[in-house]
Image (cartoon, rainbow, N blue to C red):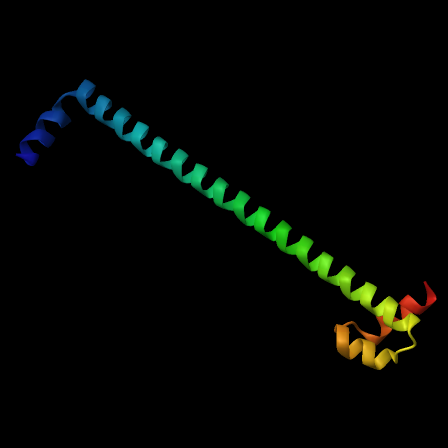
Length: 97
């Protein structure tokens, strides 16, 4: 039956063009849907990355504040570095602020 349909379609130019047009419309719709999904995922990833960056910046600020307070209390730079995870160089820069 499929062979007969194919033979009939291949003989009728208008029908063949209609089928090709319909196939193109379906493919275009699927591509549009795939693009929409990809854009949504990209937006979600960008939003998540921004949230992560904001959380990291907030954590860094908290560490710097702890280091400043510890310096004011006279703690050793090495101990502050060990407790906060900040580099000794970064802590030394806080002393000059």
